[in-house]
Amino acid sequence: MGDKAYQVDLSSYLVQLQTGRTEFTFGHINHGRQRHLINFFGSRGLMVKTEVVSRIDVSFAAMNANNIVGWDNFVGLSKRDNRIYSGTLGLEVFKTRPGTTRLEASVMDGRLLPFSSFNQGNVVDAEESRGYGFRLQASHPSQRIRFEGGFARSKFTNPDDPFLSQGAELVPVQETSRNARYADLGIGVLQN
Image 1 (cartoon, rainbow, N blue to C red):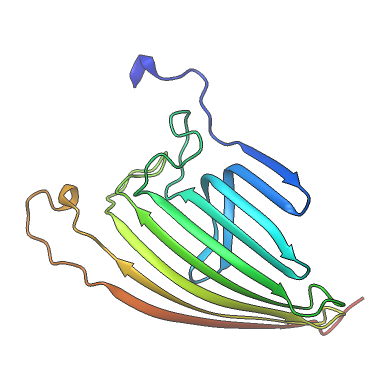
Image 2 (cartoon, rainbow, N blue to C red):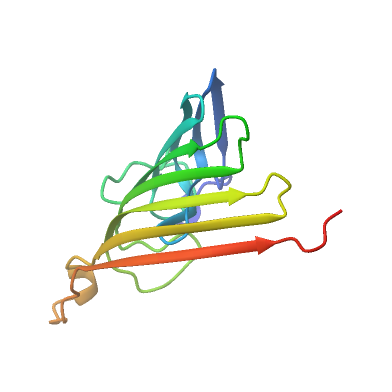
């Protein structure tokens, strides 16, 4: 923008509102705890978290697919084809011992237009991805033994991008679906 560039720009902001068991957040947010699907992805957007009933919580986020700065896309959702939607349903298994066993189911649907993020220059192309995942966290009440495991399935599509090919014939990328699994076990041998 040269001389027309803003003298003061917006790099990051966060607004949180809470009423009862429901929290509304907009600005620069992070969402997702499914490591092979969406893991603390951060960008501008909106998020709602609530405890539906005792032991069951749900969260939903709509975010820009790129990191952005500036005033012109204040909420981060101005481009419909450049968003990531994600949701998580969580269950604390034991009411008397919250935090010892938790199950989560997550979904994600995202579309990325070929834009470079702020302060980044690279060759990019359009992408689409969607998937679901499950996660289990468990620990002994003393926290001496901890377990986390998960499963995710995602489908990746790389749609034709005329800006990338610029008239040349490219080999089309095949739509791909894959599974991922993980398990972590932690044991505290010495404690206190």
